[in-house]
Amino acid sequence: MKPSWIHLARGRYVRQARVGLGELREELFGRQGFAGPTATLYHSRPPGDVLRIVGKLKPRMFSTRKLMAGEGNDGRGLPLPFLTNSDVTLSVSNRRSAMPYAYRDADGDLLYFIHEGTGVMATEYGPIPYEPGDYIYLPRGTTFRQMPNDGLTYAFVIESVQPIDFAAHPQQGRHFPFDPQLITVPSAEEYAWPEQDEWELCIRSQGELTSVFFEKSPFDVVGWKGDLFPFKINMRDIHTLSSERIHIAPTSWATFQAPGFVVVTFLPRPSVNDLDAEELPSSHRNIDCDEAIFVHSDTGREGASFIFSPQGIHHGPPDAFRREFNRKRVKGMQTMLTGVSVDTFKPLNPTPAMLAVADGETTEINCR
Image 1 (cartoon, rainbow, N blue to C red):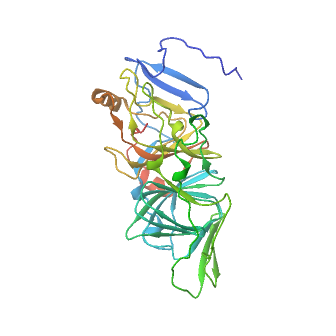
Image 2: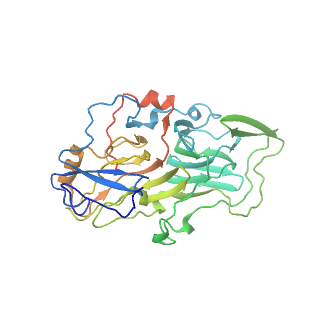
Image 3: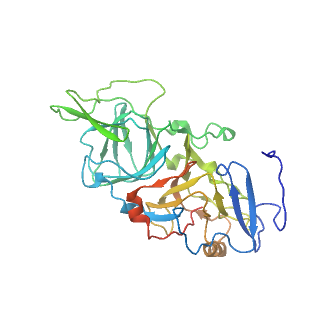
C-alpha cells in the first residue's frame, strides 16, 4: 500500500479540480465513496457515453409507482422490497388504510421517508403524526401501527440489519445538519381505540411472519425513559453544506448512517457562484458504492422516481444535459432536487418486482 500523501499528476489536467475545464471532461475514480483515495481522469471527449450494456451492471431509472406493494389493496399487506443486500433492504409502501394489527420488525431498524400523505405512526411510546418530507425512525423491535389519514400514504422504506444512527459531522458543530431540538419524540398517551376481543401482534423475524394474540392492547404504555426510542425529523429542518466556489461531495449531506451504508438528503441549495467552476458533478466511478436515489421532487422529473447506479459503472449527467445546463446557468440559481440517496458498500440486488418494471425503461442518469 502506497503512502496516502503521495499525489501525482501526468499529462493534461487542471490545477484545481472542477474549475476551468474548458474542453476537457473530468471523471472521478474513487474508493470508499467520496471519502477514500481518488484519481481525477481528464478526457478529451465525454466519458461514459454508453451505447449499450450486456450484463447485470445496469444503471436504471424508473417510477416506483409501478411497484405495487400489497398494502394498496390489502390492509394486512406490507412494504414491497425492490433492492437488497445483507446490510439493507429498500422497499416502497403505499398504505391506504390502518394496519389491522400491531407490527414489530425483529429483523432490523426501520426508516420511513414519507413522500405523500399524512397520518399517524402509532407506537408503544406514543403517537408520531407524519407528513410529506418526514423521516420516521423505528428501532428494531418497536411495536407500531401505521394509520394513514384519508387517502394514500406513499413512503420509501429503509430496513437496516445493524442500528441506524445520525451521520457524524463533528467539524460543523452541534446544530448541523439540524438542531436536535427539532426532532419529534413521542409522548406516552392512551389511544382511544375501540375494545376488541383480542389484539394481534404481527412479528417479522428472518423474513417470516408470526402472529401473537393478546387479550389486552400492546399499546398500553403509560410512560418511558431511556436512549432507545422512535422519532421523526422533517427534511425541511435539515441544512445542507454549500460552497461559493466548488461543488460539494454529496456524502457531506449524509443524515443517517449504519454499518454498510449512508443515507444522504438532497435539498434545494444555491449553485456554485464561480461560473468557471463546474456545478454539475463529474462523471464518476465510485467503485466501492452502489447509489440508489429516491426522488421526492425535481424540476422536469416525476416524483417517486428512482435512480439506481451500480458500482463500477460510470454515472453522472450526460454531456448534452451538462451543456444545456451551463448555457442557462447564472449566479445565484438554485438546484431544485429533493430526495433520499442510499449509498451502500456492498452491491444491491434487484428483486424480481423491480426487474419487472425497471427493465426496458430509460437508463439516463443525470442526478448528481
